Length: 275
Length: 275
Image 1 (cartoon, rainbow over the protein chains, first blue to last red):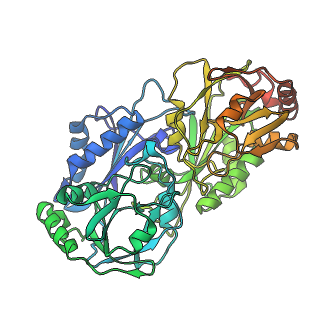
Image 2: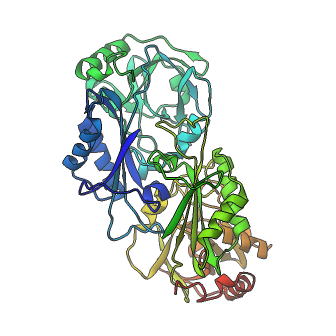
Image 3: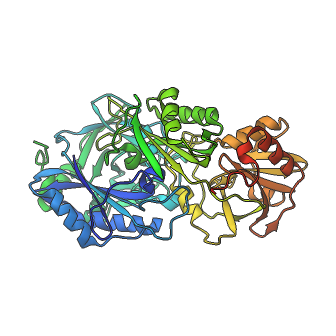
């Protein structure tokens, strides 16, 4: 992993043990697929980062400054995953935000994950997502629920786990959004009380105006005709098994994968291997 | 602020941008009052730290190793606040816990806050605590709700704010627990779905076997005869105003403060100033 820390002026800084990102998870992050030295879906990631910072009232960086720093890190990176963390910066003890917020931006480049060429298996997570509308949709640094959920299984044949909120609605996988084909329509859970507004999810909703957001129960997902999950690093992945239920791969799924690979060649199957 | 980072073997280490404490809030912390070079309520803080680590399945450190490191930092510190953060350590991208967990312990010493000699004013927070039984009671690093709540007011005359959970139960202040005198009995909110099991709160419950944990509504707190808040850095603070409601200082409160000052002289009024 290579990494750097900059402030809002783009000047390289040291990380401090007093950083509020570490102390309280007081910040937001993005995880971005890299293809031929370029971040994929940069604008969408950037907009979500800024929206999250605004909701947390963190001073927002200038896009050109962060983009330039990322480009320096991405030189000669054909494949990889770029992670950007924006924290509120140092901040003494106590939850009160210092008057002189000096946010920190931590940028790191990681190997791309091995490609997935087949439909995946999912687990039903026991860990539930608490309902917190004030923090839903944004990609903030408070991710203990996902850590607990992801560590419910060790089986390498299980790719991810689906999570419900404490009111019983299905929300998302630990690191992806989910779509289900129900009565001939594609539906994806509303994420107004928990979960992250995924970049790939938004792309699917733009591609398919007939797809809808809905409150979905576990039973509805179990009885769906087909499901897939999606995120900005993996693209679209058909699901072949969820708990005890097996699903066929719906014909819409390879169609959608092909459409995505056409507009974002980074997602062409097998293309984004770390090799 | 002075600080150090050690691993489970007590060896000094560098912090990594890849630390899961920063990435996900994947860790726990303690904030400990220091008096004459000694951490106050060390055993209680240590036990909560370990309980939190066990719930998160983080490898637990040896008490002597951490205690020795803290003692090095506390040499010549008459007053102050010691903060211990235990994270799961570095961990690549992704929520899965690495097989070779190498937790990090970040220890820092901060100035003691100025003493509070009078009863305090509280604010009713609009930010609610999500109900998440899996993470209630422990002092984990996911504290965005407290950050949002604490930043609802700027008025320096307001010391803290009371928070309700999303089901309408009063839980705690942003950085303290609360007790209310209702129909002649002292009650404190249950913290089985949100909030932290405070060290000072546990001390009060041990002192007063007649005090009870209960589900308390906002109306019950507003109609209480008296309230106080408590934490391990401030001790016990009477409340004179909460929102529009003014409270008398119940005679039990100075009694309890005196009892605390007798067993823990660090809490003698005015003693724990940063001067």
